[in-house]
Length: 531
Image (cartoon, rainbow, N blue to C red; front, side):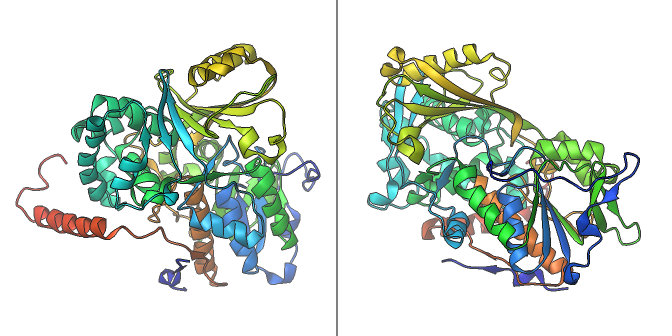
């Protein structure tokens, strides 16, 4: 086998014009092979990718480049699933995604964008473009340059003791197990954050970053997210947005590029089971209802809820403990509301995070006139609000939901009080996002599985790259592609750009912390007490 250590690192569905694919016709009482099962196709090795989001298309992209016969199955949620919900930011450290769009020859992003944070009392924080300001060592940059409107300096300074936990959390398996059992709220309490800092800053950030209230978020996930996006380097919190929907600006041209390379993109193909060779343990076919697709390797690049549905239907997966554990995981409800108003409302910042309007959910709203090309010349305001952990909003009728949204917006900007909604577009997505709840780490999967030729990818898959969200999804897709290359012993490994190295003082402190932890483990009875 090719050595996995050869993986290289460098520093550096469809739009309406796509017609629906009609699958191979089959008898109702049998599973029939799809066309890819009976054709020699120049003896190319066949790879089936389930899922068409960042992870799925990322894997398909590299495998197509290596000459494999790749089929992408979309389960019916559309191109980009499970990553096509709402407005998503692209932060400075998303180096692999930025490299991808350069490779595709597209320019989908805005410039770096200022943003703000609101509570029910009004504006709380304004976030500048940090790379335009003097660079300070972490954590001084975010602490000094961020414009806190109402939070006193003494409250801000209570964030500094939290750096001890940030240094201790080094994204290893040991660190995840240590911190995953406690809530984010317990973490902030343990390190003596002030009540106001927690309520006005950290709590809201988690409600729109991990999509749940802090008391329902893992402390390990909290530390990982805060360090990657905010604390690692001052400029990391700088964010850009798509100049249209992610599907339109990125996924559609990406899919066209893949099809031009021979990748087969199939819509409405919900996977239901596997057929595998009992002697080798390898999967030989992916079953979608009455059809099957031959495979030399398979990549599952779907969200938690979709995978849970697949597991419940699959006799093959139900027999594996690692997949049964996934049934303990949970998803988070999302509601998206796009509104066209009858007048122009001045929104000071294009991107806004909000919390404190209701203890159960966080939300964001975006000025689409400033972000999306199609709305730049509109005479009236067009905006989108996305609600996370939206259990109580999900069942509401459209009229009541819009009434609530306009009420919330009015607390952020008074001019919304005199505006009228003239058109709307509402999306409801039950259990769509991964919930990193306390104790969830032990149920999450790694990139390799007990099936020798089945590999996993997605933003909830355990890996050690250190990235989050879309970037992590894409990276795990590349990692899955590398595992296929290694397993099939063909092709070259994808080059994955690593996260930026720790600043020297953080690296030194982490080294010291590791040595202290090693010494502590040598103390008699050190493992006797609950950690």
